[in-house]
Image (cartoon, rainbow, N blue to C red; front, side, top):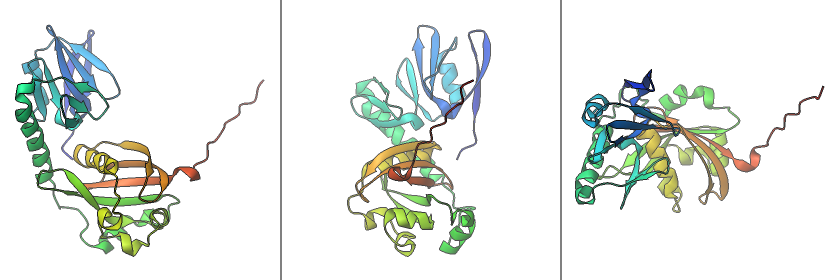
Length: 251
């Protein structure tokens, strides 16, 4: 992923250092900038929007004259800008096509910047790299995302998987590795694609608890970026997870 970048602001008389990748959007309220970051935090600072635009760089999109939003935070664009955290923002409707084009351009540039350097090439190289994952008691896989001409994730290819993955997916590893998910499961649910795309493109660590119609199982999935263009996934069958109740002795 891109080198982590930070900005420094003054908020409530304190110097605050913010990671640019954590900033979702900036909203101007008169002469005060409200910086909304992941986790629900809001930092207020006396800076102009143009000053912040220069500091934040070209991965932020101006959706109206008082708001810029991180392309990394956008889930999709309908009659509102829908963010990956569930929030939605209004935007200048007459600029909808321009905003969509800018969003797609940023995604395209990020995908084109994927480098094959230091990425395993063969199945044997992947197995060697992930050798310590072979005997883990939970499923793990490294997947390579597949994008269409419009730079949307449409599928993924299994590049590595352990024995626990084969058991969970109910397919032998030699049927999984090197094959795309859609070629194995015709009823692929797009919710997995959207989350894996976010982890791959934007470096997010995400947790999903969802029903998988493909294998008729409720899953807990933790996904995160590995190599450029790839995503790592840890998968649990919910029915196998037991809650631990910790009892404290009363004095």
